[in-house]
Length: 220
Image (cartoon, rainbow, N blue to C red; front, top):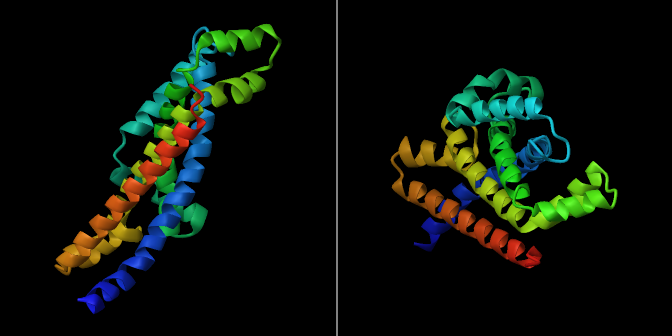
């Protein structure tokens, strides 16, 4: 029994590392891009600090279109971009490109929703003392919305984890690839169950850490 568990872990561990690698860098890139898009969506909205309704409408439409494309279709559609950036369309590194692009619009909407929760009176007070737009964004809006932002990013990480499992269906590597190759194609049910358990544990861990961080930074 113990030998079987050890053999199973030896099989799962490399795939787990690949999944963590994909999730880490995809989260990093999607959060950077999504943060920029989310901030622009908020400050260009009608009546906000940098009102640009036409830009807001166009950017919002692009984000909505990007969010509507199923991930499995998106990852195939941008094979040429993945090949251009990393030189291949197979493996965990290649999967980071579509994972980042797929998650960025979601992050943008999460950031937008969080920043819109900031009390307008606080922003108005900063405007009255002569704060610049960057100062309002980074010293007022983001600190005020930090707990909500943390929870939103936590949700993003969990979504990317789910996307990474789907990427395994077309050679993306990681736990999803392992579950399909061994658990499904070779009928090794124990491998399939083990990958599900590992994914559930990862999701629980990510959510707990996110909740703790949000609670820590909550000033209310």
